[in-house]
Image 1 (cartoon, rainbow, N blue to C red):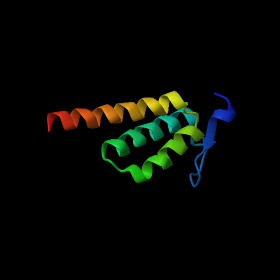
Image 2: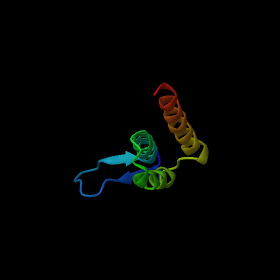
Image 3: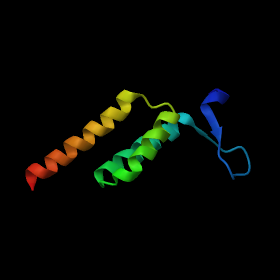
Image 4: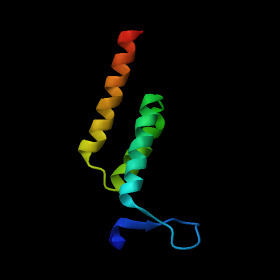
Length: 78
């Protein structure tokens, strides 16, 4: 793993590092959760975080499509 793909965690003593890939995946998970819970005001934050840590437009669009399908299926069964 190269140093460009690892960021130091602020405020933590020692050599604890979190890879960008991990941060990207968490941001995408939090985006998905916010969409499912209809917390749209925080979605921009998670999209920005995901992009900052290497998420592609396709990865983000996939999460958005999944959330849209989830909401459409809920309305059909209601």
